[in-house]
Figure 1 (cartoon, rainbow, N blue to C red):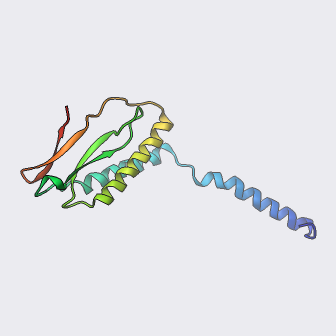
Figure 2: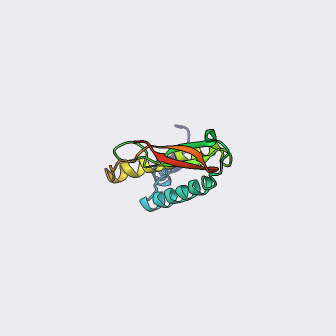
Figure 3: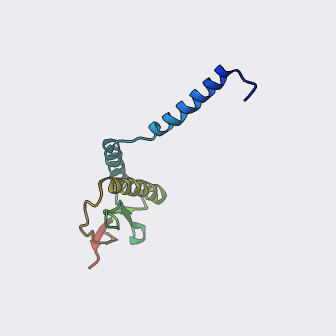
Length: 133
């Protein structure tokens, strides 16, 4: 770099500095954008698991969804593998959990109310949840 003219050196340094300064701006996400994204993800999950028809209880699954500030899921979703891809439902639930964890860290402790774990059974050809007590 010692054989380069001083104007070229200055240009290289300016470009490098600009890249470093701008790299921090690209990943900035506001709280509203996270909330909107979380809302969209929840809407997508609800649509995905809305058809709960089944022929046997082994088709009924329970997903842990979200993250409470004190630990554990924020809700449980019951779905049927007869109509819903287990892999896709689990991926969407993981995305929601990740978003809620980020939101919890940004907002601090917000909700520590207990969420009861549920089981699912195929009753009247519909996957249904019931609380474990």
